[in-house]
Amino acid sequence: MGIDVEQREIMLGDIEPGSANAFILKMRILENDGDMPIHVLLNCSGGCWFNALAIYDYVKSCGTQTTVECFGLCASAAVPIVQAFTQRLIHPSTTIVIHNGT
Image (cartoon, rainbow, N blue to C red; front, side, top):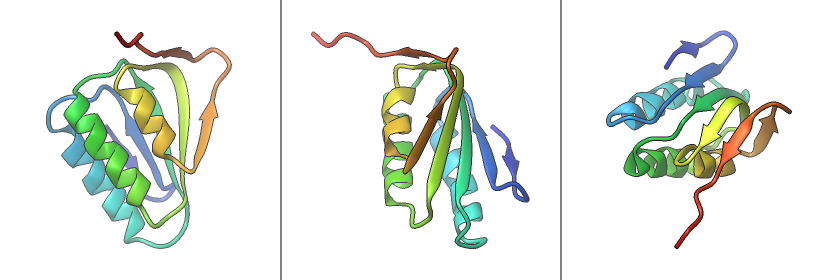
């Protein structure tokens, strides 16, 4: 997971234990650096639901406009995260996987 402070971009990959803390810290850095929009690049096969919900809650409560750009794969726990952003961009070849509930 990387951050480009000048471009106000964060790269988010698979959601593993502890990745929510790292992502939220990077969001806070950009949020405290001004009111310009934050752009997140997402290519994620899913992961830990608890971390995904922490990311969802933080993005939803962020006081700055947020944009997520999905490419490659957006699956499982990544899907609700995408819904938290104020703007969502999904590339035509992106695969989105939503599990069938029982």
